[in-house]
Image (cartoon, rainbow, N blue to C red; front, top):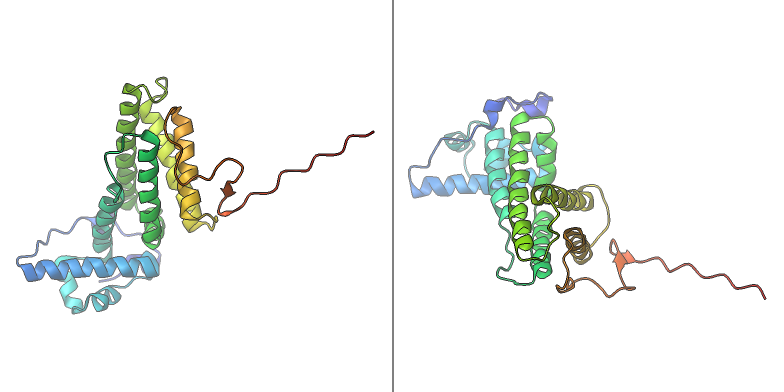
Length: 247
């Protein structure tokens, strides 16, 4: 099949339609899973435009013809990869049950920062294709909406507990804060801004806590004491020297 993105022509919406081919046997399920796993690696390495179906089947160790048993297009398997990615990043491996709100925010931010770093190549591929395709842009918007709705629920819980600023609109605050997190992490991994995971996590956590007006909770554990903070993974600039008083 022709790979439209390679020619510069964006694929139509039907190209990204979910595959309806359900494996009929355990072996078929394993083959499909192998193709999606291989596609994830190839898209992360080569981007969407550079990835080829033959590269995916070679990485999966299956014949090229087997690809079309489960997927009709490269776009379709990319949509399957992104569905798995969304599930992983929306439900990261973060500890639950923390009663301290700042500690809970820090744990969630750290899990997301680590997940994004592991999947930075795929996130770049998603940026690449969603900018020219309406269906992938819709999938991306749904992903952002899921993150925002989860955050809004958390903000409302904190307001009910009397811990967060009650004057804040939880939905709008969630949009602002999740946008801040996603764009900052994007800048680090896609635009070359320098920051290690600890500094990135602690900075995002402090901004969250300050924006919500959280008080009486623990300081982010990864945040250095005042005066010892490292900006973007580098030592902070020394304080300007004071001039001498004239006699």
